[in-house]
Image (cartoon, rainbow over all chains, first blue to last red):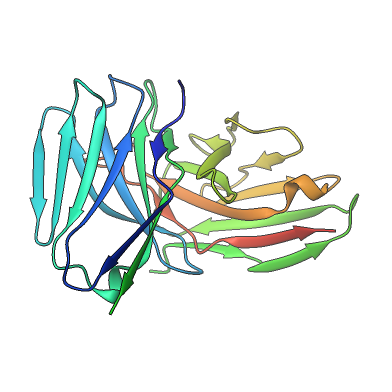
Length: 111
Length: 114
């Protein structure tokens, strides 16, 4: 299909790891992104991965990319209550900087 | 450096009324975008602009018009609002020379059409 898909909800306890998954559609996407949206705010770029990479690590964040299955994941280590937010994956559709967003995963971190 | 700003933050309209949402950016970005965010549907692109004086349709353009008379501003207009246009609207901007095509988002405008 044409949609970028994510599960809608994830609940974890503080200190656990969180894994948010995304299935994208365009195999020619040069970059794939994870954006974070805190309550009442706009989206902020959290991290990104170039399409020729399998993994990218940035402090507590690990991004895994499986191009064969068009699967992207975001792992947050030692999840904190401040990580509670909606996380969107996004792909660049061919030809232009147009982003196509997933439906968003709401992460709830409980103490 | 304010980044991307949007006005107003909230608005309630009656069906058939018109309004204009203003987006401004101070990063000298060429590209600007308007999205709408609805529950369970992520963000969908309404219109976008690749430079002053140019606009193009996105995924869901019907019922909206846009103008980019100045590089720093991107206006979204609703000529005759409908309840289906109740949503949160986000503006974003980006530079074609950015290393990884990052888009910068405004804080959003929450619009309710009664």
